[in-house]
Image 1 (tube, rainbow, N blue to C red):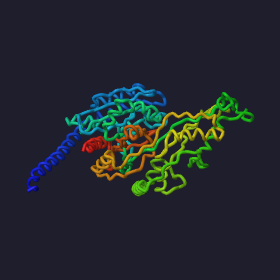
Image 2: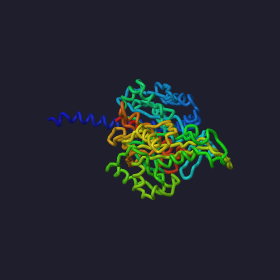
Image 3: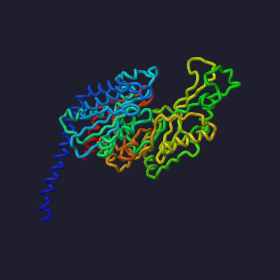
Image 4: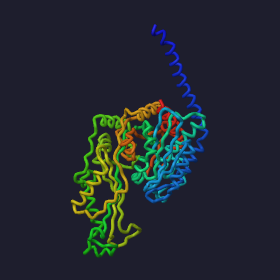
Length: 496
């Protein structure tokens, strides 16, 4: 009797389920048609955006970059997009509310790294669409993959959904900043504004649009990112009280101390002789890899191609000639102290026999879980003072703590499910060896899951000839339209 009574209800439920599935398929068909129709305008939107350069380190393109970002959001359907000033560069807060049951957060960056046009084969702000064998057609330009290409693909997904006459499956909350490339020093001022916090607290998680596919089409899902500190160490005759207070003739080195050598000696105390082990006194200790993380790394190491990775990075050896799996374990588990650049004295053509009065080392320090940026910075300063280098200025320009997100979070599960719809079995990865300011989302007071998502491929971030694939010649890698479709699928998966 109970079975007979439930059967009609079950039938209705099942039919409703079938209707929802077929409805979603019909939605995707109409949306995919719209993506194809809008391809040229979407690519042009990306090219124009690359032409709008914002570089925080050079104070270039502000506040125009933020205003441009706000306009892009409004054009894509966000009902409001507000430029919010900080003590640094402005950010953008935008919301798209369709009354959906679920709300998803977005993290965007509109700034890019510096560039020297002389190092590029194609002008970095022209965003030319060129043939790049064997990849296919790519856009070359600063910000092409980091991060405007994937972000433009996501915006194209919103244009296509609306253009197809479909309702957005989720509400969206966007936080966009213009200082990511200098360590996001003021993002807390943006995220912790009452109206932004209130909107974020309604979200199930936050993601950043990315191009996740390797050259062989493999996708890794990052469950976090390393933290970072960006700083300058400055050695000067003025602060040291030794050496010249302005550049002098190099013959005087026989009787005058050198601030440049003083800096070199200080740098040598920070690391082992080979530069690979941190030797800063009382430096925060990294959390060892868990058994689960080691298993992830072991699996990925059997799938990802070591030789291809070396070619991609233009390297011949890993540290200590470690085997591939152990090199990956080191990548994931170890903090770093890296010299980005050394600047001092004369660096032009030929020689100029001077004794420089000032030398600067630009440093970045990557952090892994259980390490705090404030603790690492304090240890560095104390170490320099203890070893006789207390005069060296330590100027932190930006930085933040590492992030972690559970593989069981709805955000990550939806990523895995979406990739599988494209025939990709994604690999879980403990954390990105790079950094982004996800700590403002994963930490107090919102404590959300956070990550990166998106099909497609690009490379050359921070380097000359940065590119993003538009038309892929490799069936294993999605082009621009495929990346757009992946974002559509992901939004619908998040809505489930």
